[in-house]
Image 1 (cartoon, rainbow, N blue to C red):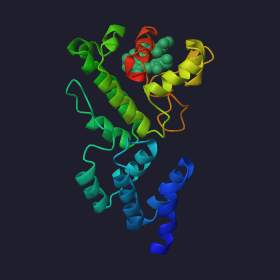
Image 2 (cartoon, rainbow, N blue to C red; image 1 turned 90 degrees about the vertical axis):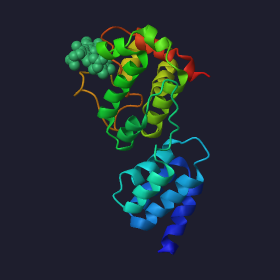
Image 3 (cartoon, helix red, strand yellow; image 1 turned 120 degrees about the vertical axis):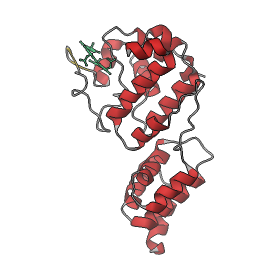
Length: 229
Ligand code: UYC
Protein backbone atom coordinates (compact mmCIF):
# COMPACT_ATOMS: atom_id res chain seq x y z
CA UNK A 1 0.00 0.00 0.00
CA UNK A 2 0.97 3.67 -0.27
CA UNK A 3 1.78 3.70 3.44
CA UNK A 4 4.39 0.99 3.03
CA UNK A 5 5.87 2.51 -0.09
CA UNK A 6 6.20 6.11 1.09
CA UNK A 7 9.08 5.54 3.53
CA UNK A 8 10.93 3.67 0.78
CA UNK A 9 10.37 6.55 -1.63
CA UNK A 10 11.80 8.98 0.93
CA UNK A 11 14.85 6.84 1.64
CA UNK A 12 15.45 6.34 -2.07
CA UNK A 13 15.66 10.10 -2.57
CA UNK A 14 17.58 11.03 0.56
CA UNK A 15 19.59 7.95 1.56
CA UNK A 16 23.29 7.26 1.20
CA UNK A 17 24.35 5.32 -1.90
CA UNK A 18 24.35 2.07 0.08
CA UNK A 19 20.81 2.74 1.33
CA UNK A 20 19.64 3.67 -2.16
CA UNK A 21 21.05 0.42 -3.54
CA UNK A 22 19.24 -1.57 -0.86
CA UNK A 23 15.95 0.26 -1.45
CA UNK A 24 16.13 -0.34 -5.20
CA UNK A 25 16.41 -4.08 -4.52
CA UNK A 26 13.43 -3.94 -2.15
CA UNK A 27 11.33 -1.97 -4.63
CA UNK A 28 12.17 -4.50 -7.34
CA UNK A 29 10.35 -7.14 -5.26
CA UNK A 30 7.24 -5.03 -4.65
CA UNK A 31 5.58 -5.40 -8.04
CA UNK A 32 4.00 -2.53 -9.93
CA UNK A 33 4.02 -0.07 -7.04
CA UNK A 34 7.75 -0.56 -6.60
CA UNK A 35 8.34 -0.09 -10.32
CA UNK A 36 6.34 3.16 -10.24
CA UNK A 37 8.67 4.56 -7.58
CA UNK A 38 11.71 3.61 -9.67
CA UNK A 39 10.23 5.32 -12.75
CA UNK A 40 9.53 8.49 -10.80
CA UNK A 41 13.09 8.37 -9.40
CA UNK A 42 14.67 8.10 -12.86
CA UNK A 43 12.56 10.93 -14.27
CA UNK A 44 13.41 13.20 -11.38
CA UNK A 45 17.13 12.62 -11.85
CA UNK A 46 17.30 12.73 -15.62
CA UNK A 47 18.71 16.28 -15.82
CA UNK A 48 21.87 15.11 -14.06
CA UNK A 49 24.52 12.79 -15.49
CA UNK A 50 23.62 9.17 -14.70
CA UNK A 51 25.38 7.46 -11.80
CA UNK A 52 25.51 3.74 -11.08
CA UNK A 53 22.51 4.19 -8.77
CA UNK A 54 20.49 5.37 -11.77
CA UNK A 55 21.97 2.34 -13.54
CA UNK A 56 20.57 0.00 -10.86
CA UNK A 57 17.09 1.52 -11.07
CA UNK A 58 17.21 1.41 -14.86
CA UNK A 59 18.33 -2.24 -14.84
CA UNK A 60 15.41 -3.29 -12.66
CA UNK A 61 12.98 -1.72 -15.14
CA UNK A 62 14.91 -2.96 -18.18
CA UNK A 63 14.93 -6.53 -16.92
CA UNK A 64 11.33 -6.48 -15.72
CA UNK A 65 8.67 -8.11 -17.86
CA UNK A 66 6.01 -5.67 -16.65
CA UNK A 67 4.53 -3.99 -19.76
CA UNK A 68 4.34 -0.57 -18.08
CA UNK A 69 8.07 -0.67 -17.32
CA UNK A 70 8.87 -1.49 -20.95
CA UNK A 71 6.53 1.22 -22.17
CA UNK A 72 8.04 3.75 -19.77
CA UNK A 73 11.57 3.03 -20.98
CA UNK A 74 10.53 3.10 -24.61
CA UNK A 75 8.91 6.53 -24.11
CA UNK A 76 11.46 8.14 -21.82
CA UNK A 77 14.81 6.37 -22.18
CA UNK A 78 14.76 4.57 -25.55
CA UNK A 79 18.58 4.67 -25.64
CA UNK A 80 19.20 4.13 -21.93
CA UNK A 81 20.33 6.64 -19.31
CA UNK A 82 23.85 7.42 -20.56
CA UNK A 83 24.11 10.01 -23.33
CA UNK A 84 25.41 8.01 -26.28
CA UNK A 85 27.64 10.66 -27.87
CA UNK A 86 29.90 9.57 -30.71
CA UNK A 87 32.16 11.58 -33.00
CA UNK A 88 32.29 8.83 -35.59
CA UNK A 89 28.67 7.82 -36.02
CA UNK A 90 28.75 4.70 -33.86
CA UNK A 91 25.48 3.56 -32.29
CA UNK A 92 26.20 2.54 -28.70
CA UNK A 93 22.70 1.28 -27.97
CA UNK A 94 23.60 -2.40 -28.49
CA UNK A 95 26.45 -2.08 -25.95
CA UNK A 96 24.10 -0.22 -23.62
CA UNK A 97 21.64 -3.12 -23.83
CA UNK A 98 24.19 -5.85 -23.10
CA UNK A 99 25.40 -3.92 -20.07
CA UNK A 100 21.83 -3.27 -18.85
CA UNK A 101 21.32 -7.04 -19.05
CA UNK A 102 24.57 -7.45 -17.08
CA UNK A 103 25.93 -9.69 -19.83
CA UNK A 104 29.48 -8.54 -19.14
CA UNK A 105 31.17 -11.15 -21.31
CA UNK A 106 29.25 -10.21 -24.46
CA UNK A 107 29.66 -6.52 -23.58
CA UNK A 108 33.42 -6.97 -23.25
CA UNK A 109 33.62 -8.57 -26.68
CA UNK A 110 31.47 -5.82 -28.18
CA UNK A 111 33.72 -3.20 -26.56
CA UNK A 112 36.81 -4.68 -28.25
CA UNK A 113 35.00 -4.95 -31.58
CA UNK A 114 33.64 -1.41 -31.37
CA UNK A 115 37.06 -0.01 -30.59
CA UNK A 116 38.41 -1.77 -33.69
CA UNK A 117 35.55 -0.23 -35.66
CA UNK A 118 36.54 3.24 -34.39
CA UNK A 119 40.12 2.57 -35.49
CA UNK A 120 39.00 1.66 -39.01
CA UNK A 121 38.72 -1.26 -41.45
CA UNK A 122 42.33 -2.41 -40.99
CA UNK A 123 41.82 -2.84 -37.25
CA UNK A 124 38.46 -4.58 -37.80
CA UNK A 125 40.21 -7.08 -40.06
CA UNK A 126 43.16 -7.51 -37.66
CA UNK A 127 40.79 -7.73 -34.61
CA UNK A 128 43.20 -5.80 -32.39
CA UNK A 129 44.48 -2.27 -31.95
CA UNK A 130 47.80 -0.50 -32.42
CA UNK A 131 48.68 2.01 -29.70
CA UNK A 132 48.68 4.66 -32.42
CA UNK A 133 45.02 3.82 -33.16
CA UNK A 134 44.15 4.58 -29.55
CA UNK A 135 46.00 7.91 -29.51
CA UNK A 136 43.68 9.30 -32.16
CA UNK A 137 40.42 7.97 -30.69
CA UNK A 138 37.76 10.65 -30.21
CA UNK A 139 37.31 11.51 -26.52
CA UNK A 140 33.52 11.46 -26.96
CA UNK A 141 33.49 7.80 -27.88
CA UNK A 142 35.89 6.71 -25.15
CA UNK A 143 33.85 8.62 -22.59
CA UNK A 144 30.61 7.03 -23.79
CA UNK A 145 32.03 3.49 -23.61
CA UNK A 146 33.53 4.25 -20.21
CA UNK A 147 30.33 5.79 -18.78
CA UNK A 148 28.28 2.82 -19.96
CA UNK A 149 30.60 0.43 -18.13
CA UNK A 150 30.68 2.51 -14.94
CA UNK A 151 26.94 3.17 -14.75
CA UNK A 152 26.07 -0.50 -15.28
CA UNK A 153 28.67 -2.01 -12.94
CA UNK A 154 28.10 -0.25 -9.60
CA UNK A 155 31.09 1.90 -10.55
CA UNK A 156 33.42 -1.11 -10.59
CA UNK A 157 34.30 -1.49 -14.26
CA UNK A 158 35.58 0.92 -16.91
CA UNK A 159 38.83 2.27 -18.31
CA UNK A 160 38.91 5.28 -16.02
CA UNK A 161 38.49 2.98 -13.00
CA UNK A 162 41.44 0.90 -14.22
CA UNK A 163 43.47 4.04 -14.88
CA UNK A 164 42.82 5.31 -11.38
CA UNK A 165 43.92 2.02 -9.81
CA UNK A 166 47.06 1.94 -11.97
CA UNK A 167 47.81 5.55 -10.99
CA UNK A 168 47.31 4.80 -7.30
CA UNK A 169 49.88 1.98 -7.68
CA UNK A 170 52.49 4.44 -8.97
CA UNK A 171 51.78 3.31 -12.56
CA UNK A 172 53.47 0.01 -11.82
CA UNK A 173 52.19 -2.64 -14.23
CA UNK A 174 53.48 -5.59 -12.15
CA UNK A 175 51.39 -4.46 -9.21
CA UNK A 176 48.43 -3.53 -11.40
CA UNK A 177 47.80 -6.95 -13.03
CA UNK A 178 47.18 -8.94 -9.83
CA UNK A 179 45.19 -6.04 -8.35
CA UNK A 180 42.59 -6.26 -11.13
CA UNK A 181 42.71 -10.07 -11.36
CA UNK A 182 44.58 -10.31 -14.65
CA UNK A 183 47.52 -12.20 -13.14
CA UNK A 184 47.98 -14.51 -10.18
CA UNK A 185 51.61 -15.01 -9.12
CA UNK A 186 53.40 -15.81 -12.37
CA UNK A 187 50.27 -16.87 -14.19
CA UNK A 188 48.30 -14.70 -16.57
CA UNK A 189 44.56 -15.19 -16.27
CA UNK A 190 43.36 -17.29 -19.20
CA UNK A 191 40.88 -15.85 -21.70
CA UNK A 192 37.94 -16.29 -21.48
CA UNK A 193 37.22 -18.75 -18.67
CA UNK A 194 39.75 -17.53 -16.13
CA UNK A 195 38.07 -14.13 -15.94
CA UNK A 196 35.11 -13.27 -13.70
CA UNK A 197 32.16 -12.11 -15.76
CA UNK A 198 30.04 -10.61 -12.97
CA UNK A 199 30.17 -8.02 -10.20
CA UNK A 200 32.02 -10.35 -7.81
CA UNK A 201 35.15 -9.54 -9.88
CA UNK A 202 37.82 -7.24 -8.44
CA UNK A 203 37.40 -3.52 -9.12
CA UNK A 204 38.82 -2.68 -12.54
CA UNK A 205 38.63 -6.30 -13.82
CA UNK A 206 36.74 -5.27 -17.00
CA UNK A 207 36.86 -4.35 -19.81
CA UNK A 208 39.77 -6.56 -20.86
CA UNK A 209 42.59 -5.66 -23.12
CA UNK A 210 44.81 -8.42 -24.43
CA UNK A 211 48.39 -7.94 -23.21
CA UNK A 212 49.88 -10.46 -25.65
CA UNK A 213 51.43 -7.69 -27.73
CA UNK A 214 52.64 -5.62 -24.77
CA UNK A 215 51.39 -2.74 -22.64
CA UNK A 216 51.57 0.00 -25.25
CA UNK A 217 47.88 -0.11 -26.15
CA UNK A 218 46.60 0.05 -22.59
CA UNK A 219 49.29 2.63 -21.69
CA UNK A 220 48.11 4.77 -24.58
CA UNK A 221 44.50 4.32 -23.47
CA UNK A 222 45.38 5.52 -19.94
CA UNK A 223 47.31 8.49 -21.39
CA UNK A 224 44.35 9.62 -23.49
CA UNK A 225 43.10 13.19 -22.86
CA UNK A 226 39.53 11.80 -22.51
CA UNK A 227 40.23 11.09 -18.81
CA UNK A 228 41.63 14.47 -17.84
CA UNK A 229 39.55 16.99 -19.73
N1 UYC B 1 44.23 -12.33 -21.93
O1 UYC B 1 45.84 -13.30 -20.59
N2 UYC B 1 45.10 -14.16 -25.38
C1 UYC B 1 42.52 -12.71 -25.73
C2 UYC B 1 43.52 -11.19 -21.85
C3 UYC B 1 47.59 -12.07 -22.66
C4 UYC B 1 46.19 -14.89 -25.59
C5 UYC B 1 41.37 -11.91 -25.96
C6 UYC B 1 43.87 -10.48 -20.67
C7 UYC B 1 48.71 -12.85 -22.00
C8 UYC B 1 46.11 -15.55 -26.88
C9 UYC B 1 41.27 -11.08 -24.87
C10 UYC B 1 44.82 -11.25 -20.07
C11 UYC B 1 48.72 -14.05 -22.84
C12 UYC B 1 44.88 -15.14 -27.43
C13 UYC B 1 42.32 -11.40 -23.99
C14 UYC B 1 45.05 -12.42 -20.87
C15 UYC B 1 47.63 -13.99 -23.76
C16 UYC B 1 44.27 -14.29 -26.45
C17 UYC B 1 40.48 -11.97 -27.20
C18 UYC B 1 45.56 -10.97 -18.81
C19 UYC B 1 49.64 -15.14 -22.76
C20 UYC B 1 44.28 -15.43 -28.81
C21 UYC B 1 40.61 -10.76 -28.06
C22 UYC B 1 46.63 -9.97 -19.01
C23 UYC B 1 50.73 -15.24 -21.75
C24 UYC B 1 43.72 -16.75 -29.00
C25 UYC B 1 42.00 -10.55 -28.60
C26 UYC B 1 42.99 -17.32 -27.84
C27 UYC B 1 43.02 -13.69 -26.63
C28 UYC B 1 42.55 -10.75 -22.75
C29 UYC B 1 47.30 -14.99 -24.68
C30 UYC B 1 40.22 -10.02 -24.60
C31 UYC B 1 43.30 -9.20 -20.16
C32 UYC B 1 49.95 -12.03 -21.94
C33 UYC B 1 47.13 -16.48 -27.48
N3 UYC B 1 43.05 -12.40 -24.53
N4 UYC B 1 47.00 -12.79 -23.62
O2 UYC B 1 42.52 -9.43 -28.45
O3 UYC B 1 43.59 -18.17 -27.15
O4 UYC B 1 42.58 -11.49 -29.15
O5 UYC B 1 41.83 -16.94 -27.58
O6 UYC B 1 47.27 -10.98 -22.31
